[in-house]
Length: 216
Image 1: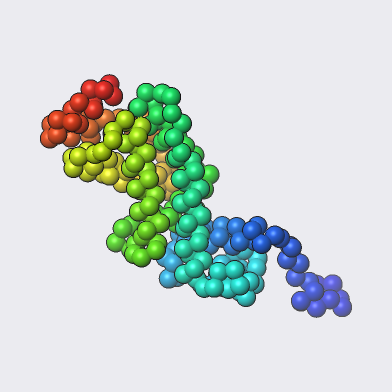
Image 2 (image 1 turned 30 degrees about the vertical axis):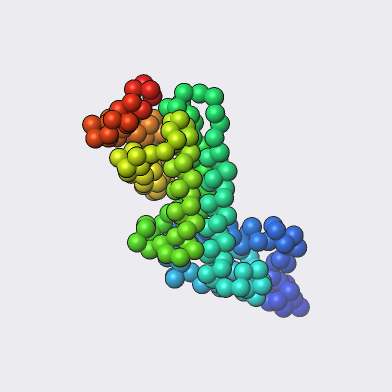
């Protein structure tokens, strides 16, 4: 340390940021921590330190850890949903493959947000947090129905699509952890997985058999 300078003056000065930008940085730091640790194990001090902010500033913007957790997950969910907005014009399976590419773009570019959004599984989701995660799943479900030109899903198709969505989520988390399969191969495998699931479902519900013929 330079003689005559105190520890306080030797610290790097915090950058002056806009309110929105500072909130974004705090949420990004929180998502990074929540992606690898349970929310109960992350403190406000941890978030403040990771963001290069003061503890008081985190409380100023969010009120507490639960509010920060919910805001961070909402931010991740909104970013993911924006990627999944339909790009219509192709065949249903082509549109599904395109949606998967955008989904995995998000997984790759926002790994912490994706992991934080899904980490822990349904058993640990309750209240507002559970609503955020379930909301993403519901919108993804309805997007797939739209891509397949289906107005309303019967019980067999509904179960099949929800099972496939859970598989996609698990595949995303597994890919982030291992990255030992090329993304295009994984995305194609998941499209093939959808077709295979529909093939099984078609033996239980005639409407699914008709849908499968239309998709081929």
